[in-house]
Length: 566
Image (cartoon, rainbow, N blue to C red; front, top):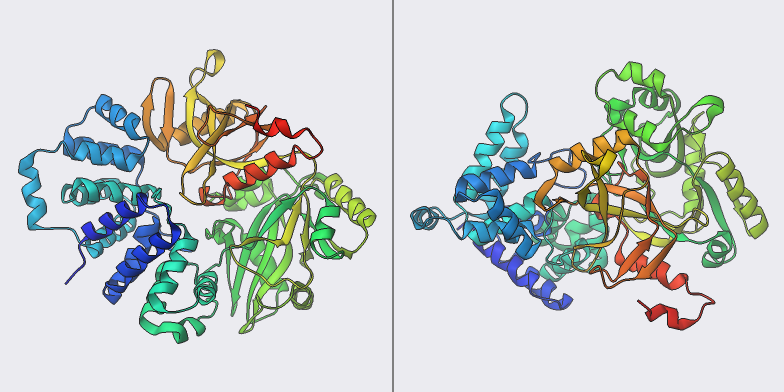
């Protein structure tokens, strides 16, 4: 018998009200063990709010405007009703539940006759994603209407949350890994490694629960299925990096470009962005370069693509993003915005996985295959003075700073640890998510131009506001941002538009202060946007823990009473 979607919704409701990690893992584990094998993948993806694997190019492409229109059609709610319901909870899912509870009783009878199942919901999402081309918008709307018309208010709450990718019940990928381990009897390390290689917890859960530990051990990297990039933790300076890495380390330029993962097999090349989006079509010049220079049958390489101007100086990041988003007039764009590729790692070569090899060994493999493609400028040193000179050289060349890589470190996809450290200099920046915006005044009255900036709470999945800013963007960027945010609009109250948390911006600031004004407990002083991070998704935004670390660091050598002063 198919598992009713109601059971998944009820599980999510229990998780939302539970704070103990062990209890949450046990609840999910018990649920997974009761599923049929064909329900495991969709159930896991729906619980974590990710309809498709991170590497998949499939998207639902349902705007919040479409969701609101559907809810209005189903419930007869007015704009005022929607704003009032959203104001009560601040959560789109809860707002949907409140409005759906007001549906006429006549419509409720149908729900009992044809209850939704997990497979019903997931297959409908797949059909929505498959609707493309002429007439696709109406088809998507029709499919969504049909789905929500069969949903109970509680089911509708979690359908909407899944559409937005905002579950807010505290089930992180790490917690799901624990639940899969419990349900399957595998070790947490085995599950984590499988997730690193597959990039999809649905696949991992299916293999763990149907094939057991042996199935997990047999998992290998799949070409043309990109894996999450290894991430670096920030440190203040080169001395701190040397100390953290035992006195000697490798320093590479932190190039001011876009990170790419390159998959090669028998003359076929695919290039994936940091967000695992396939950008091959936008970079024909890079594809040509790879085919000319990399003489191997199979490989997975990592590198950085930078846009270059006169004297090979890097152009601003936003110029490069124009290349990455271009699907038309590509030949013209390759001339207008020339790019260079720098390689800095190799993860797979001719059937051999290299992620478990030490960094220095991987570098030697890379040196053997890179041909005439640039390698990231690099030194290995134990000298703080030499490292500092190298840092200043990188900055003078127009790049962001340095990445320090521990010489014996393996490659850990998707993990931000201390094996890699980034040094950007004195200016503090955070990658933050825009969750709302105010309409401007005077010259900016037609634009959403005062942005609410939020960090991630890794424990709950919530985005916590830590400040606002209207500084940093050009008039053209204000216009583009307004258009983009209105497409992500959830609700509007007064002069504030609340949006789906999707747009990431890099924000510089002078200081972090404690503040009772925001739920996060912190506020940024003199915040200004330095760039729009098109290459990052909301799950890569900085966390509240990172904010606390910076806040504590500010008070080294200062009187401790300042730490608790509002």
